[in-house]
Image 1: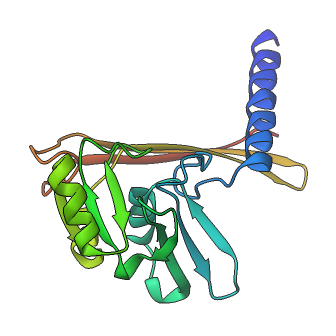
Image 2: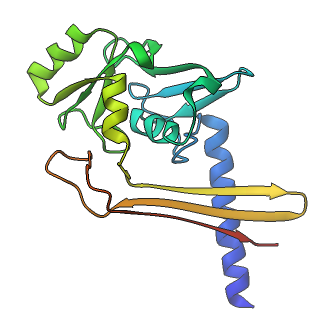
Length: 190
């Protein structure tokens, strides 16, 4: 009985925390983190006009791996220098350890290739266009842990998803090897 009460109180606290975060910030659909660092923010707009938020470029790219990009009206990232929202397909991306992004892929976006190259000269790293960036992410299982809570009628459904790379090559988060772990779980509380 004690365990059930403690378990219920813990999840009630988690639900209330999640509700307060959702009310004050956009929330990343991929990793469930609050979107706080606007320099790395990305978004996709569905055909119905609904905006889907991402806290980092790597979350957007990982999310799109299982989607058809044609179902979105717009896919946009934030220019690291200006803070303006730009089309993801037209942007250039810098992967540099000197510019850490929220999920650790160290990706930043730039409106112009010359801007990305200029920052690359100062900070180091590699520059990619949209297609090359997506190709580099194909086999990537970038670490992300997400928790979901859903109230469906009188049922509370808890979910968790985790992706953990088991091997990373010398180039940081980009992996050519297909070693990784993905898992998910769903639990009906009541």
